[in-house]
Image: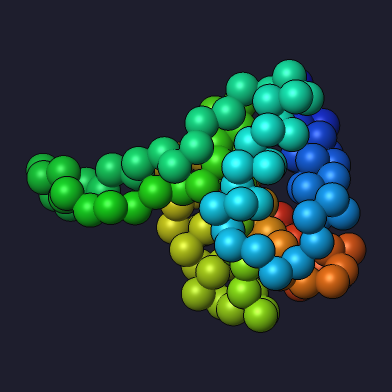
Length: 125
């Protein structure tokens, strides 16, 4: 499946979760619901995936975890905050660089409108 088709399916699942649950819940609730929707769509996912950090010849024991990895090709980072900030975008970009994955989706479920470009952002590494 091409990345555009894959991200289209993921975005559809995101909209379904948001339309069903609405804003105001914890990130963990949205993560579980989105994982269910993605699996129901026949996609392979991993949740709370540890990200190794290498510094020189040493692997650092750090607790970076990405929320959902879809088809080993797209990172979905879930937030439930008043407003997405630059730090959230940088966090996802860092995850993309560390994992060498090309594309990620940053979603803020704590909004009344996911169609607003500030609440669902596609980030390319």
